[in-house]
Length: 230
View 1 (cartoon, rainbow, N blue to C red):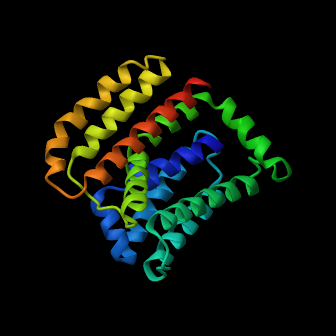
View 2 (view 1 turned 45 degrees about the vertical axis):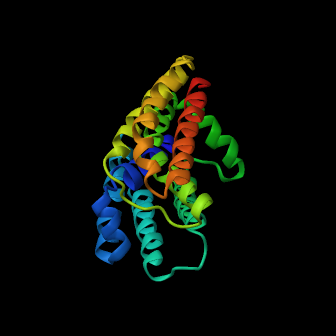
């Protein structure tokens, strides 16, 4: 159940949060509710193979997720966008952990031991979490890191369809690292850089582009290394 809930978060909060929904969520409460419903349904579906009666935990995660996102519509503290994004994700993960603790899936007096022990036993789920992570989550994280560290601003969403090419690139890199084929990583990473760089040089986002590219590739490599150790 532990791995399923974290995978559900990656799917519901990132993979199934398409550009128009993300934009709607950032403007209106209706968008937050629509996104929250997606998270609720995904969390429920992912819980079914483990405990189809765990409706209290699903309701708790879904309702608090909506509350956290809704608060950000009206409360905008003067903090960097990268820090705000980090705190948002930390809050969601803490909510999931609380739900798992009160659901009896994590022993509160041995939370860290229980968490790592059960995750180690859920090998397939960990692999799925890793591959889900390098898709949309890494795309979003890399953008926040690049724009936040280079410009000190929030990312510019969206930026064309190249995100899908980047996703495919990271999936391949992760797979090659898992298989120990490290020499193939540059062969996957460099073509997009070579093809896109001439257009980037005519804009003012060259440094941001390189930072985002580096963070995306690095996170894919780290994820591949982590999966290979399972």
